[in-house]
Image (tube, rainbow, N blue to C red; front, top):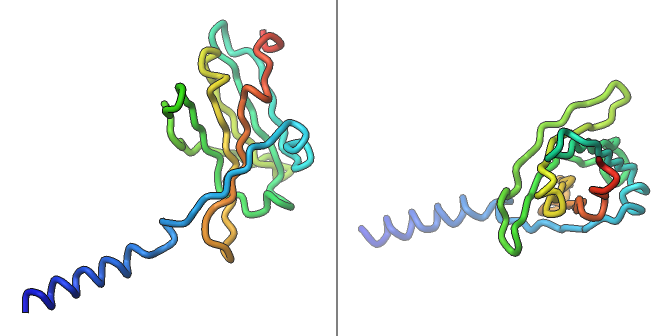
Length: 142
């Protein structure tokens, strides 16, 4: 009797655990040119002596139609300091998604913004990564 109960509980847990939370995430790093083709614009300006204000803007259409959220990731070598923190977006009157944040100059080159999309017909997420070291020149943001 106890064995049957254990097997039933195990089978139940396997059925519950086998949902989409174990799906893969397809990640594509973007260059400035690729981001521009997708309609993604990144603006940077000084935010005091030790920080940079960033604003990411795009319209959720075309390849970005299934947009769900933007994530922040800050790395230190091979380790992540901030792992997948979701950022709050606003919608402009034209329908664009706008995400803004302030980042320390010391961490800007280690900062990645990820635009995440989910296609309900496919398993997993599709993510476009924007590495700030490729998009922001700290010398120009003074």
